[in-house]
Amino acid sequence: MNLFKPLDPTEGSSAKKELSIENAEKVKTLIIGSGPAGYTAAIYAARAGLSPVMYEGLQPGGQLTTTTEVENYPGYPQGVTGPVMMEDFKAQAQRFGADCRWGIATSLDTTDRPFKVVVDEEKMILAETVILATGATAKYLGLESEQKFMGSGVSACATCDGFFYKNMDVAVVGGGDTACEEASYLANICSKVYMIVRKDYLRASKAMQERVLSNPKIEVLFETNTLEVTGDTVVKGAKLVKNQGLANEKEFTIDISGFFVAIGHKPNSELVEGVVDMDEIGYIKTIPGTSKTNIPGLFACGDVQDPVYRQAITAAGSGCQAALDAERFRNEFPL
Ligand code: NDP
Image 1: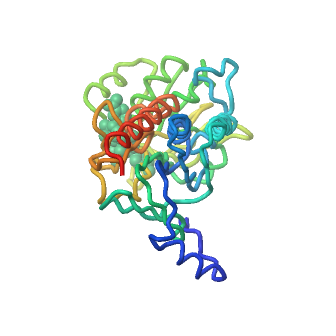
Image 2: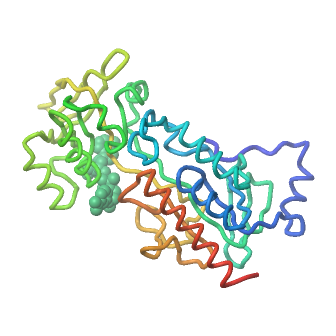
Image 3: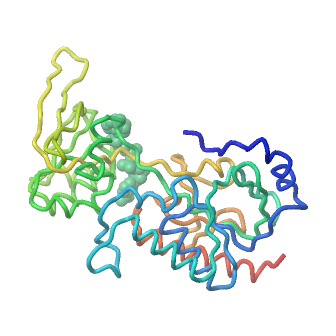
């Protein structure tokens, strides 16, 4: 996917002009990325008088715009769809003056304050503080059938969608901590949970492994891969293969209504690779209990810094923290 918007040749000279520091736009707080974390940061920053500018990124609204019903976000007693919820968040931020723009931050220089941020490779912004809210992207197997049933039985979030499969049989793909956690969560709701694990062991922590292996509602299918998710308009089953590529390879099917993919997430942190401290997967490290990165004035919130909870409500909470941290930082270190 091309992350960069091509430059319009007719705009070449004005684009260059905007990239110079003299013509750069000065911003108190720049928010990079939308979604519950970014929009919440925008609401709080706007109300604190920081006149935040937000660049919404490639997928305005973030991961929630690919989900259907959200039933676990407080304040929506009847539930709400992910896209509508994100529209509500955005409208609330705009009501207080947040400037939400279409665009992608393509580089960030934190050598000095104000930070230099280039947007769409053609516009320079000088930002006193920057809040990173670029989120994470769930990994999928890459099957055509998986894509076909996205939102109609295929999900990457058991906490979000598990409830729709109450008393039904479901499957979880993956053998890490997330997959074990999702399987345990689903076992409390569903009749049966298959775990489809490609190796002959679980990669998850010992405690997590014990939890799933001792749960009578969870059946772990080791050395098993998915060939296809099957169904008509909704998921009805999955075609699996055991010992793929070996002499004793065996295909079989399972009847399921939900297919949960839990093979990891990719934090969207490329923009600050080599700039801020990250863990080995690429999650931005923040000082516990805060949104502060190792660079003063640069804050991170939401899924780009959270490998554990990854919920809309926790992302929103951390977005609030980021705005409050940015406001206090500006007061303490004015430019
Ligand atoms: P992991 O990378 O740890 O695990 C991914 C799992 O998916 C592995 O079992 C992997 O198999 C499998 N997998 C990857 N690609 C495929 C594929 N194409 N087909 C089939 N299976 C595949 O990701 P997690 O999201 O589980 O965890 C990420 C990090 O977050 C970890 O450090 C984890 O410990 C942490 N975490 C901690 C939690 C907690 O403390 N409560 C909760 C959740 C996560 P294989 O082993 O063969 O590579």
